[in-house]
Image (cartoon, rainbow, N blue to C red; front, side, top):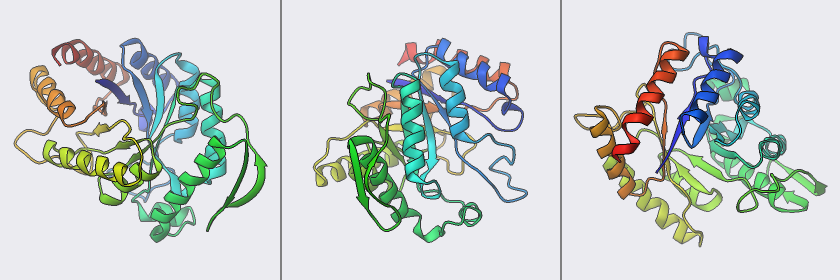
Length: 293
C-alpha cells in the first residue's frame, strides 16, 4: 500500500514557507506521494473552495524543487479549461527537472461558474477532457507529432522533453479522477489509473469492478487505483463511521478492506489549523497506522 498527502496550499497555507515545510515533511515522514489541488477562480462567498489558493502548476514546480524523491502530482488538474499543448509541455518539463516523479491526475471539473470565467462551455467538458488527454498522449509518445481533433490540430510538430530519461514506462502516468461511469470509462480508455474520491467500501468495490471491466473492453491493463479521502469534501461515504476516520486500528482495518478490493494508494487530505499541527497529524498517521496494516 502506498500513502500520499494532498497538501493544503490555500489561505494561510498558501505561503512559500508553509508549502516548503509541508512538502519536506511529507517526504521526510516517509509518504510515497505529494499532491496539489486545482481551482483558478471561484464564485464570491464560496464556502467549499477557498478564494485564496495558489495555482497548482506553480505549486507543483515549487514542491519539485523542494523535494528529492517523493512522487508529485495533481489531484486533480481540471483538464478541459487548460490548453493541452501547454499542459503537456509543462508537465513533461517538471517531470524532466524532477527526475521522473510526476503523476498527472486529471478531471473534467464541476464548477460551472469557473468554466464560464475561463471561456470554456461547461457542457463540452467531457468531450474536451477526452480529446485533451489524447493530445497530451500524442505529444508525450511521438517524436514528431500530428493531431487532428475538434479543438486542437497540428502537423509535424516537435516538443521536448517528453519526460525524464529515467521515467519508468517511458511516459508520465495520467490518473483519471471521478466516481461516475464516464470517469471510469475515461480512466480505462485514456488513462493509466483510476482516482476516485470519498467512496464507501461497497461503492469503491463496485467501481473497481467497473474499471477492470472497462479496461478489458478497451484491451488495456488496469492501472493503479488511488482514492482521495477528504473528511470535509462534498461527498461522504455512507455508514455509521466514515472510512479512514477513527482509531489507528479502525483506519488500518479500513485500509486492509479497501486493499482487498483493489486499492493501491490512499491519499490523505487531513484538516489542520496550522502548519505544525498538519505535520503533527501526518507524523501521527505514519507512526500509528501503516505498522498496523
